[in-house]
Image 1: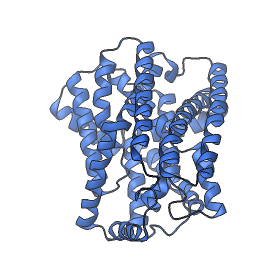
Image 2: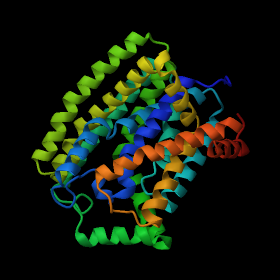
Image 3: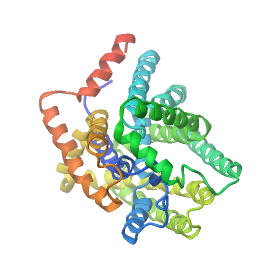
Length: 380
């Protein structure tokens, strides 16, 4: 493997990481039901509904799709190393994710990425062309969406306690999150196991598909910035427009149905997932199309530093948010607009931390530990 950094790829990772926080801040600061359903305790205020609608149209699922594709690109880059080294690397990521999920925050993605990444890596190592990777990725992705529709047909009822919780359920969630300790660990363990069950049943197919699409985009050179800037810009604006043509009607239908659990949470979520993926590729294309120009060179350089420390910065976001919302009692005290206003401050911490740390070290602290643990049990 070459030792040089792929600056544009790193900057895309940094962009995806910072974008994920725009949605995750609600996952930290509000009850879990609020993440998907703005009407979880009844119709929201105009301000809350407007912020939700904008986030739903331009952010929700988009940066997660970007992040998954970029993770798959990383798997493609590392596929030349030994199978044992890659398996060890993903094992340690999954273990870190499990600890993160149980002891810090139940919105963790690292455990899922580690487990799904193992299966994706096997496919990547046995697939020789970008076209094959893309075809397989698209197939797995749509299998996941088909399963989502099937699960919706099995739900039967338009009510779910996880979708529209009772006052007692909300009070209990608030209590264990603010109290912490063994009760919180036990609740997060149950949620972690339920999430992994959903990964096996449905989301894992979708996620593996996104990873393989990302691997294919890197294999073709697209994620290495090898296409002309005009191509990236044209593709980006076209995909962005298509994503809005899907996103906006689906979002309006969710409001029109009164946030019915089955319709809004399953059936209409399928087109929104497709739109988010197209939008994620659009954002990548636009960043590659404009971020490589001289006018954006400073932003590109800063984001590449954040992207080089993706894992450390992701965990730093958790540390900041759990400290404020759970240990200092900020949980469920702010509306969506107020939560959104906190995001730039956390971005600044991520950026300053990255710039200062990489001034003296070659890797982020967690990245260094991850590499050392991987090398303990496997050779490159």
